[in-house]
Image 1 (tube, each protein chain N blue to C red):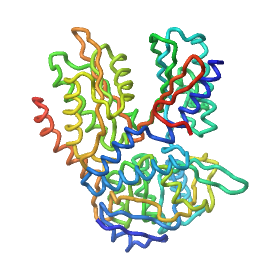
Image 2: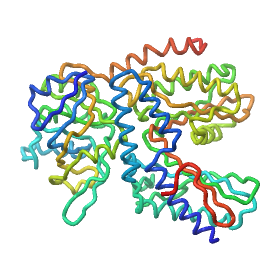
Image 3: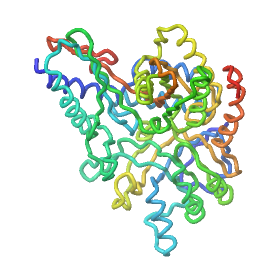
Image 4: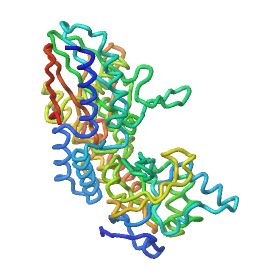
Length: 293
Length: 201
């Protein structure tokens, strides 16, 4: 198999799947939200979201005009050869998908204010690498919308305040964000490590499916507690009032420096897009979040 | 909550019937305008120049659509709403001078716009953020495009729609602003939430 070619083709598929069809767990969570929402304005918004999601899937059109900043997570088996070719393959795939899907060109040079036109540029698409045992290559794409990105928060909290400081920080972040991140949202929350580590873990936590509770029972409890708290704010779908503001809270952590208590909250909009595939050494490809179509 | 199906041109009387939380679908002419189109329209008005379209009774949509050309026809691919607060600095004068009756966008607008809507008889309809395919489906054709020199997202796209919506009326012509109400309620909920989480203030 030509790894570079396979990765490129798989990544184009992943980008198309991600922006046109929500993963099952997110669809189910939105349907449940519609059933449970009691505010009429909130219900109207959720119905429009569900109709839009269905229509996008049927017509294979991006479900939102903002197709995001393209971020990849790669779990590379240590035995996979030619790993150095993957970055280029993912860049080429992003550029190709921009015209093919199509994606909105969302990569702007911050100094020249010029749009590169194909969603690629310095450090973008961003690739998060993880080396694991084995001979397979697992690629996940997370197209991350701008509206929800703009309200992400990082707090260097006081260690003495402990977990209560974290809870307050999360709720304050949700209230401050209000209608801006296109709720209902998914929250990725992370503590510890350092400023960059907390933020990275928070965003990565968004990848865990909504129907998978945290493997750590204490954190699973905290996720539930924060979800209930966020859904008591009254912000509601699209900020028009209601009880469903957040679909899920996903927590991760790293141990921390004794003097530091970094806390990060990553917001995802209702269009919580992601897609994953695994490539085997014989060239076989398994799509884990979507059916190939 | 009442559901209305309105056809443009919408009269001041019809606009004044609407109340916050009502749901509206619009059939007829909707015109897109973002920051630059607002700016130019007001500039034209100041200089006494005629606008390429009469906005009276129409709906104004805060939207930068993705449009493609097939032969000599324009086709709207995606047309979700953009954040409306950026247009707060123009909208009161826009409503006063051009008498658009429905402003469509996301996220709501501020006091200046709310006051102008009360004074001149207009409403703000919130369209679901990101629901670009739903919006495009209700757009039957592009009648024409003006000020294309501003770029595709900033141009005035004059669209023919059929039951464009649902639009939740979030600001009515009676001084009510749903987004402001929700913000205030959320603020009231903050302390009880802290308490439930066991946080001292």
